[in-house]
Length: 114
Image 1 (cartoon, rainbow, N blue to C red):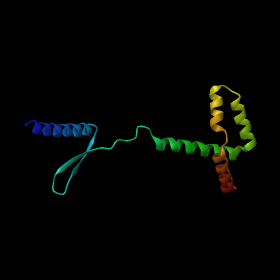
Image 2: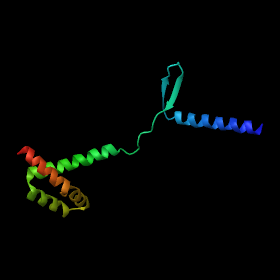
Image 3: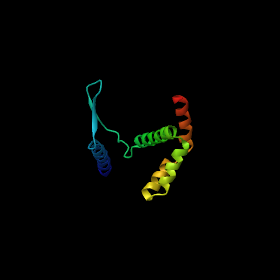
Image 4: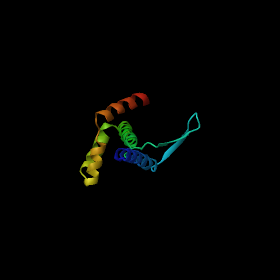
């Protein structure tokens, strides 16, 4: 009797685990034979990596467009003036400093724009 009770307790634990997963959201699907099957929804990432990558890409494109529009000398002078300011301005100067990717993208923009 002890063995059958442990099997029963194991089945109850599995049911409770499935129930707790379904509490976070589920999808109901009707199978071909008419049986309704509930499946737990997949979790989304808590940190939006795609949004972060899009933001970084937009910032690099913005830096390249500014580099093309004002020229490298004026852009460097403006970044240097930011570097001499407060802590927030120094942080901005570090973020806006031209890097290899920005310079390469600026060359591409310049060729496209003529």
